[in-house]
Every structure is written in structure tokens, then in C-alpha cells.
Length: 297
Picture 1 (cartoon, rainbow, N blue to C red):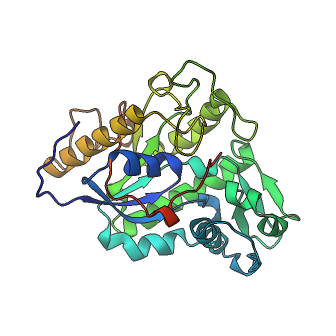
Picture 2: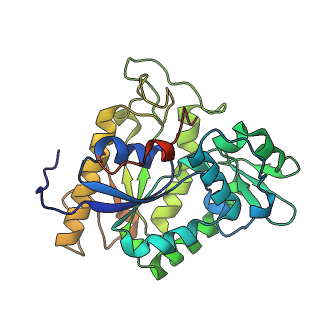
């Protein structure tokens, strides 16, 4: 673990993603990280595609957080949210978890993320019943997502956030801590998901994003995880490793803005922006009302 002086100001973190980044910060950050904003359930493909008029006001959503995230996705408001918090963000932590179910494409060009919350709310699901589902990992999905990633990079640069952005490439766990094979998520196994995600992370490296990576054999799923058993719900040591490596990288970048770091992150070479170990820790956790509720499979 990395010991920081008690007087050191916590790193202000904005999370774009879902359970991987959120649980890393929440379960392993302690007083080292403070959440500035948390943006979930929003595919990069839906950003800027305002379909808010389609969101059913009578939708019966069990939790306030889930409703807010769905409304935000229908509005495609990611970039507006990031703009609002840019000056209060020391680190933008991005995971691709919420891409995993693909998107719904409407005839008018609107795009809505096929999130676990959307699937669970009949009124919201009805809003996309005539839309075309584009599955994650398909060539069409990647061809839609790839230029959006480049546009997103350019927007982050304009807001002074690109150099503060770290992408988490944490593979789905193939086995649990007790040696059992992990269950699939919506019919997708860990092996299949890891293969599908690969070209998305490769594309982000091509665009110059810093990527923190763990190897498949380095992660285990936790059968007792607070959100339930899933291949992307890890044991505590995974979250600890994520945050320690993350803070090591950030600390090094503050001391040496360019050149090679001791942990393998190369700030001058976009193709080499990766780290092989990761950990998590934070006292700056979202409130219970704002936490992701239930198994987000």
C-alpha cells in the first residue's frame, strides 16, 4: 500500500464508467481519493445524441441513482457533465463496463445505451422497442464507437482533461476466489468478453490514452461481492492493486511530466501507455442513494 501524508489533499476523481472504476475508488480509496462526479450507464456512442423526450416520465425505477443515470443517458449529457466538473477534476477514471450490452439505434438518429437498468424497467425498455439493437463487440458497434472515441479525446483535450484521464483495462475474471468458473453476463462468458474488448482498448492506446492494465490470471471474482457474483466483481486485492498502481502513476507524473516511469507508463509514447498492476481505495464513496444498487450484471 502507498502511504500518503495525512495533510495531503485527496485526489479529486471523476468516474466515467461503472462497477470497475466505482468499486476501485469506493472499496480501496480511503482518504486518498474524493469523488467529484460519477457518470454511469452511458455508452460513448450515445454521447451528444439527445433522446430525452423519449424517456418515460412514468417509469417505475426503484432507485434515484438508476433513474438519474438513465435520464442522463437518454439526454447524452456526458460531455456537458465533464465540462461542468473539469476544473474540479484531478483524475478522470474511465472503464468500458457499460458498453457491454451495446446500444439501441432509433430511426431519427437517437442512441440509447442498453444498460442493465433499461432492461429492468419495462416503461424504459418500451421506449426502444422499435429501435435496432447494435451488439457490443460487433463490427458495426466498433465502427460506431471508434470515431466517437477520437472525438471524445479531442473534447477532453479542449477541457484540459485528456492528460488527467486513465482508462482501466481490467479483464473479466475467468474464475472465482474459490476456484469455480465465473458465470456469464447476459449470455457472455469472461473469455468471450475479454476477446471482444481487446480492440476497443487497442484503439484507445492508438489515440494516446493512458491505459492501466491487469492480466486475466491476475484477477479473481469474489463470490461474496456486495453486488453479487459476476466476472467484473473482483476480490478486494484487485481493487487495492488498481489504486496503488494508479496513485503511483499519478505521483510519478506530478514529479516528472515527461519520460518513462518506474511502473511502465510512458507519457511520451502513446503506444506504451499501460501498467500491468492496479489497486483501489477511497473514503470518497458515493452515498448509499447514489451507489449502484444490486448486481449490475
